[in-house]
Every structure is written in structure tokens, then in C-alpha cells.
Image 1 (tube, rainbow, N blue to C red):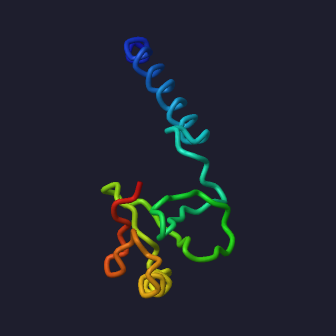
Image 2: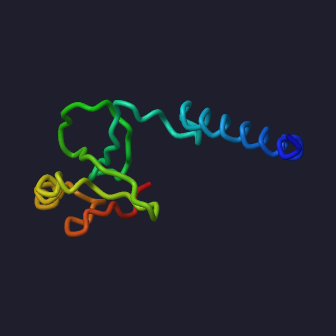
Length: 105
């Protein structure tokens, strides 16, 4: 019983922190847009990135993702589309070999 009395404050603080962490994750904390049902895309002609509803898209918008180091890369599934856009002279922002988006605004 003495143990619980001595650590009641610590247990209460741990409970509050746990509830805050769950609420943060559940309500999409961090100031980023809700991503449920959305995918990130990059326009290879302008370098702009967008969060759009998941559905087929027309080129020059290709799917991308943010890497752990903060860079953005095009999905490897879109490699052939990036190469086609590169050959057509439309691609201005995606390295067709590494698929990394460079110099985006």
C-alpha cells in the first residue's frame, strides 16, 4: 500500500501522458493533412506535391512518398512513366535514375 501512495503522482502522470499520446495519434496531430484514403503525388513539370484522393491519375502527376531524410521520391511503380516524361521533355524535377524529386518549390 505504501508503494502505491508513494508513486501515485508518477502513475497519474504516466496515465495522462498515455492518454495524450493516444489522442494525438487518433486525431492526426502534427498539422499534416489527414491521409486516410489519400496518396501523395508530385507533378514532374512543376515540382509541386499534392495529397489527392486515391484514384487513377493522368500524367504528369505521379505517386510519391517522403523518405526518412525528408526528401521526396517517386514510387518505383511509376519508373517507366517518369522515363517517358523525361524523354518527352516534360519531367523537370524527378531524377529518372534515383526517382528523387529535386529542387521542388
